[in-house]
Image (cartoon, rainbow, N blue to C red):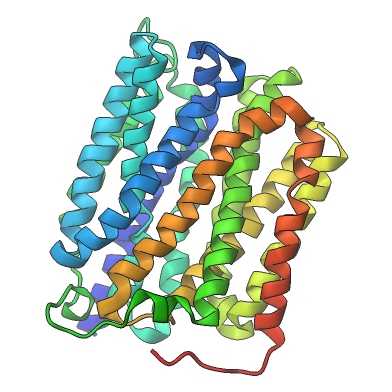
Length: 397
């Protein structure tokens, strides 16, 4: 009974922290490109602040995982929230106040450090959950994004004038305040002994682990799905603004996109348990293809709405499915390097996608940009099909 109570309490803490972090991520995705457009010397670099957040994630994600393998999840998460969340939010405010594109980009890069640690909340759910509860625990932690789907766009729109005379700085101050609340919550996180780092235990070479088919499919599914989602998500506010839509309409679309990302988390874990991770990955790739096709079809509010909701749902299936599949490829002792390399490669692609979003949108337009995603989605679909319908071959770790 104590085990179950502690398990659920830990998952709840991680879900709330996930919610706070996603509010920060939504704020960056919604506002940083628009602010970048005002501060940057060249419109093609409008999404550079978003790319800097992703670059900060790329730089920090492997060190974050290796650090937590030594000092534990709780201390690592607190450090990330302090340096990245509090520090990044405050530096971004300074950049906006000083009208400095460089300082604003640095602030967003620090927020990437926050993300570099926070993305391991889903793996911490594995550490605090029993084997039968792990897929659902990952899913439930990510479900914290549902509340963020309402609070993130609200922060991006309602808080823009929180600081008198510094338009659009308020949401970034809110990020810093929320990161302080995250630190308080994480101080109550209790990771069981089995989920803490241990010294002197054998771990296989990374090359052996990475040679497993499940590792390869997990990595490609999550990384390609995430990169496509971020690229189109980053381009959406710019595309809508170019077509005359207001920031309130942009926030509305982003809100529904984030709902599409995280609402399925309430049942994705159960679907994986029932149908298998391969079929969920296949469903995610088909849904992502549907998003690209709808986006290619036009740029009305209905096109943006349907496309971004499907984009979110497809990302959820690929990311939760990929994370669950990855957890079958390593032992507790191997988790630091495996999860770190996995997220390093994922966010390298994500950073590239966010960096290219402005340039590709500027060069090809919204409809053509969506069409360009289909070959990559097809690759994921083929791998997922092989996994879903190949004979069972459990990974031995």
